[in-house]
Length: 349
Image (cartoon, rainbow, N blue to C red; front, top):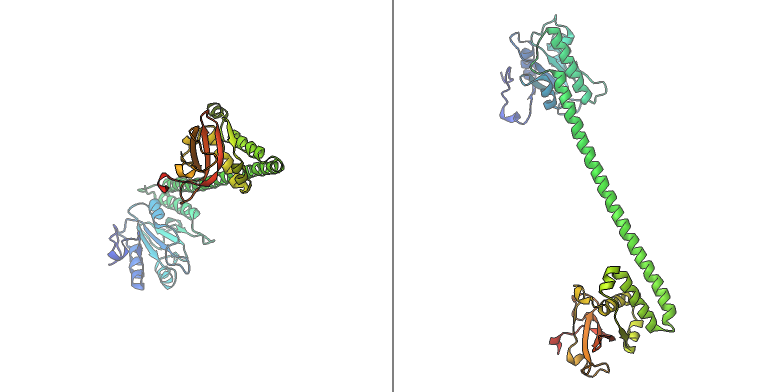
């Protein structure tokens, strides 16, 4: 016979399934013979599908955990074959439409119905509640027969429930972790947005203040902006180490700053502040170098032996002509900002 009667001997076509599928009326007849075999000792479990589905309504591995390792498990599709099978068992109560039945050994017309428990869910759900019904129904059948089972079905069911609860807890935990991660990201974005908004507000306030002052005193407005950038950029300890030194603003430098946008003027004030407090060398984003000789040879602010001419880029050097601040470092250490232009290199001649 193709259907096994003791230990499972699966064919190659069903090696991925923990049950034997009943695929024809001939298989139905063989399955009925297995159920009614007086020499049979192992449990026979017949699972069915819900109407319109192709697989069993319950997980066969969960069922196996409750009925024990030696039970014979079959899958009977709901339909004509399930009706045929019901006609062949003594009480004509074969499983159908997702229900399942377990037959102990020694099936006869005189057997009590509870000796061969059937699992039926009127809702059609067939979930954890159905497995519980199987476990307690099977324990009652064993007690009625006075049989000591290989596996206590109720204990096995409780173990399954513990595993299920732990798995659900993991899923819920991952959900909470994802929610927490999203909340943190939203919080960080909100904090960043608040910082950007606060900085823009400060810049707008400075611009309004500078615009009022610059009309009458453009040099004073730029010096105020330089001071503010020094105060905002450095901590109290850093300001002690890098005090704002003496500096002068050349007339060409002030005029060139007046035509800049607020963002570029703010950046200019920051660069000037870092130059004056002697911190520009520590900042990788700024490039500082001596100004080539031909760039100031005919300039009114040429050092003429009284100091050195320098340049400092306003941005990173990722373009051919990045904007730069040009200044002199006089013999007494005073910084004199002379103008703005493009960053020059020694090779440019």
